[in-house]
Image (tube, rainbow, N blue to C red; front, side, top):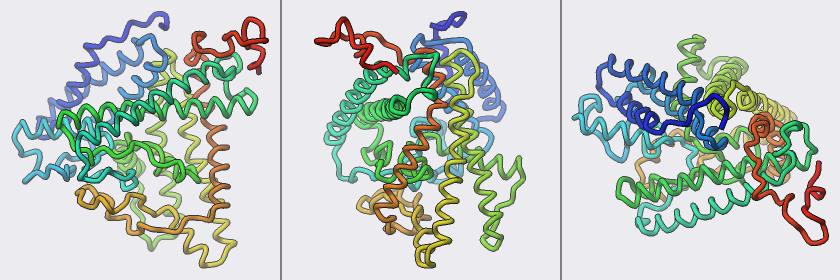
Length: 433
């Protein structure tokens, strides 16, 4: 536990959760919303800066979760009008702000627990495929149990590997200054561990809500997309990584670019250079908001303000700009036919249409190209190499603050401390930097 910090207070966190739901109930007086949000600001500041769970990994996740939920509430209270948000599975007759209190509370609760907006009008068009609507609850629960158990097994294995990686356990050196092999293993271990944990938590949550009859199986598609889609940094964030923050980030980024920066929406008749510059500014704004959310997790983790996660996320627009420029130059030097096909690469919607009984497919109606030719294999392999290199370099900025507080140190599972035949007391020498 970090000195001079109190133990995380669960009852106060429960009040925070209840206040979040109350603040986004449609139709409640603005004075109630503003008062509730002010209280939420104080509670979140106290929990993130003054308390600790005693577990660095939990602190990291808890701080980011608190900031994410606060951002979601800010979106509904200050930016997005509730009547513009539709639940396509439970269509409301008339405006939700004019519904009964019971219906409005149910609407707020459903919106709160459905961070990706599955089945809502704001669902991402890049959501992974659903299970067929005919899938029974028992079959879905069994499937999610298997996936959840696999996720737990993967996280436990990664936990052991991280605890045995000298680059992840020597705080004086850090991951960024370690040899490439240890750095690559450290970045892979951190990403795989986070992937596994978020995945199995989502699996067990879906088991609970579907098993108890509160939700349907088709509202729980996979949280992550296929790694086979990750041949560019842009595609990693669009197709592969989760969309848990997409709705509030998109709303806040739109608000910032149009209401704060006063940038007009440029029609297609405007020069492409201007439209590209505006898109890039929007992208930087979106990643700035994402970075700010993760700063809260790092603050709760280390007990002080740090910019490791902030640096990582603010580097992502640079990576996207580099690969976009490279793709433009490739298209420019290629034939017109290659240029035309290149423009369609990222417009594919990888959700299958076999499940088009689902009303949420209307959320992706803007994606008109469902089958688009992928780049040739050698280009994709080049892309995979670029993506791996990019994250091996950039993700170290985010991981190093965790290394410095000893988040990955656990002598109980450190294989360097195990006794191996013919190696003396332990194997530390085998795994030195």
